Image 1 (cartoon, rainbow, N blue to C red):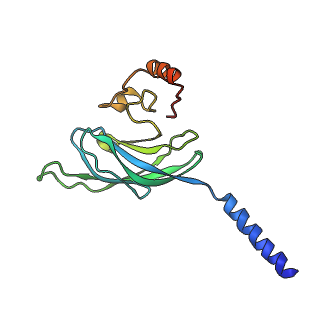
Image 2: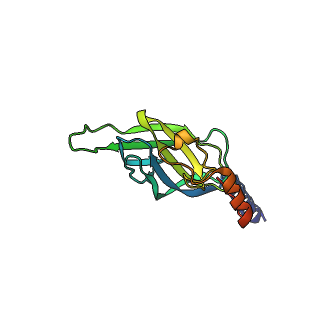
Image 3: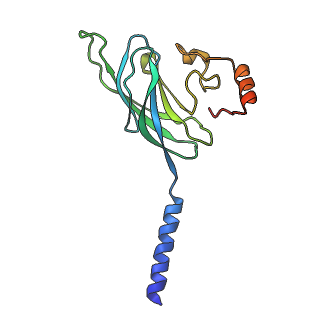
Length: 169
């Protein structure tokens, strides 16, 4: 009887420990380079690699995968590491950069991690199921340049109503 009780308690403890573990989701890593004079040779999000991104390029390649909690919570951060490449042979080699950023709030379904690179080592992070040209993509018009929405929000909502779709940006 004692052996059965100990086995039961061990199983119960194991179940309780695994139920407390946070459920995570693997999502893609996408890069957008908003500079016109820098080449992002390589970058990573919490160690998960992202694609190389030339000046004013991005969104065309996705790497797999970085793990995020299935449900957003305040205080989450990710570590972005990147290395600039040389555009010309005589360009000086620049040291790698690294920054920790807060993870912006995301919806019920976790989207891909979009890393936006700007001049002066500025980085913006977006978690989204929508591409950068979607009218509800969560960046303002200035932060999107050189990209822009492919239609207005009103046009998109009208289209959603006609086809019975709903966006999750």
